[in-house]
Image (cartoon, rainbow, N blue to C red):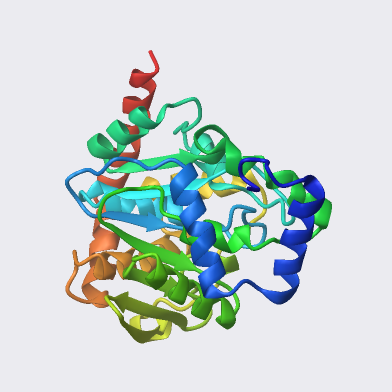
Length: 315
């Protein structure tokens, strides 16, 4: 009713703030997911399992997002990655992924769902841009500013999967109760292959200044997995966010094979996901593979290939 605007603005605001105060139950969150699946976009399947790297829609303002470079690392060896999100939005108003991709020369705006599907199939990377592909959900964004709090749909966005085929979700969170709620909700809607990560600013980006708290969910079983960067010589500071231009400049340096703190964070994050996606037999091998992919220029070539390919599709 909220998505279709059958509920009044007063009812929508009351619903969102009430759920912010009490937190939705897992069943309620699963019901919201059902509505997103019924009314939202769904990419048709390709012939591979797709990895979904999530991040809160209201962005980042303390640490540099790692998932765009992680996505390029994974896609460079044929692991398809799908992301989704919108523009800057309340309450955090942090940098959204769409702006980072745009600054890296990859524009996901003004593309049909069929184009996005073809890009995913050809380049193993795609992005669902909510203002264009799911305007019903995007119309709820102003309520975030008007109620002044993150509503339950902020949690919903972390576990929504706009893809109809086999998928492995990588889900970030901040507060431990959220992990329990999203785990149970995903099981209720039949999503049984996912990893939860207590990541940077609620994303699925692993930190390097502390152990990474994760859980591997396969079927109905869940296994807690603590990964300590110090055990692999990867401890250090998480790269701090300053502004978009500085962030992208560091990313380009990493893609060019440069060594900096961001590169080490990308290797730590990508190595973990290479392992969890089944490409590498263990974390140490995943880290070595991620470093080699970056140093050899293979990730840079993938970035340039996607850049030129998407530009050509717009001509």
